[in-house]
Length: 48
Image (cartoon, rainbow, N blue to C red; front, side, top):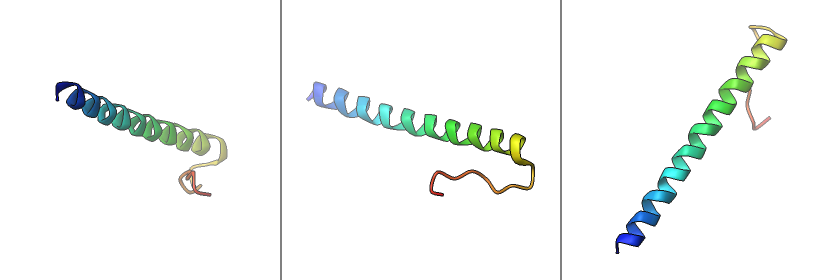
């Protein structure tokens, strides 16, 4: 029981951490693109 709870919380924590890192990565890419291309460019999207 305790091992299952620990695994669940561990996987939840890893999932939120990777989401946090992807948000930071996307904001950094958006900032770099704004600096390189110009301030009137649309925000960077990974779906393009």
